[in-house]
Length: 341
Image (cartoon, rainbow, N blue to C red; front, side, top):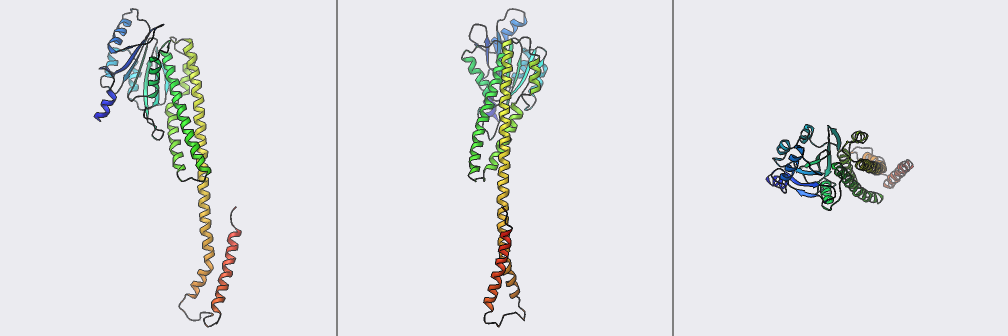
């Protein structure tokens, strides 16, 4: 437990700030700490000129993080209420002048068999973007790499759009990896090797359904946001947000098609298992029918009673062999005549 706490708190300052950046027009983003962020926020609160905007990324596993945010930032109450919630679907919604978002993403040590998901909480307005998480995420690290490369961002909305696109990229890679594994299962299925395929497909299907439920943004929330974008967002950022929504729609369609393909393969495997079971049962039935005449004759002649026919006949054994052979042939003809195609 203490090792996990040390791991989650590693790399952040006393306020729980992992890293922060100050964006100004015409200059590269400048890294800042929590003290510099407080000075910039105080200048903004006094009505003084504070150029650009800030991106502050926090570690919610840090004990002092939430208290520091409540003391020094005028974030909406909905943002703090959402910190106590469990995993929920990705969503974006308005709260006064703020945009509040919940973005789910896979952790760094992601395995398709485990599908461990962590949640990123986001609050954005015209001058500030606040993000926070408990476990490191891929999409937020990709965003930081883009910022460190000097990529230009016009507003906090542009950073949020970049996050959504990175999330769509992660989901698309998961779909491609899963498609490759489904191809392998399908190849084994064509070779009539179905022993381990059912468990593999069932595991993949459960993971994809969970990822679709958590990573896919709520369409209604996206449409509401596109119909009423924030007034502080640039027109170019709103257009890029629309394009990111369309990219998400394409990825979700691919994911739905992959789930349907897995379902069809599961049905095919179930049909093959049922057919194999039917053949086994049929073989056992034929063996039972073929053994029926000799069992009946052996049962009758094995009775320890008097009056057994052919007991004194010199060719009694061969007579019984002929009777058993004739009965077995008749039973075999009947069984194979009713053989299913």
